Image (cartoon, rainbow, N blue to C red; front, side, top):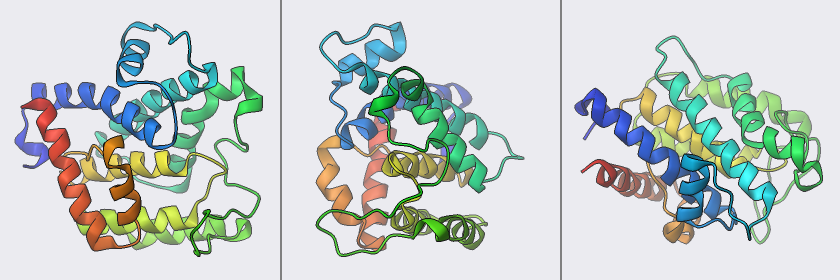
Length: 225
């Protein structure tokens, strides 16, 4: 099923439902402790979870705002993916938490990281800070065309290997997948937290990730059936 197969009402229902589901699951994959119900109450009614850290709830709100931004831009035929767009997603994701709980947010926000980073337990070299801007722009240039699901998967893996931010790389990467899916007439994939280990394992192989994303698209389709 393609995104264009949905009616306008179905598409709006999908995006409204994904706003909560994708926010919850993408945040939970990164260790945010809010339950689905707490996320739903926070986003729909502004009800905070009394026992959960404030900065986590502000980042959850930031993710939903970044999702809204991505949906709006992806639906705009004149919009395109560039480095400023990626930085904007990151800034929106963390700006509320930065304003209220700056001690709990890794900086810089909305800019590339300035220090070397490593993925624990994995022998993979990430981009050096001085190369990030060029690496991101080269990545965007290589995929500046209509993309199939395999190419969206490959972009995601390459983006995560650049690891351009101090924090939030996975969440920004998954939001970029949402943008690219919509731009290429795919229903955005919903990666469930229950499938976290399968997702992380698939990041080492583009064909495994493509298959995983195909299954994750079915998760999204089930939301509107």
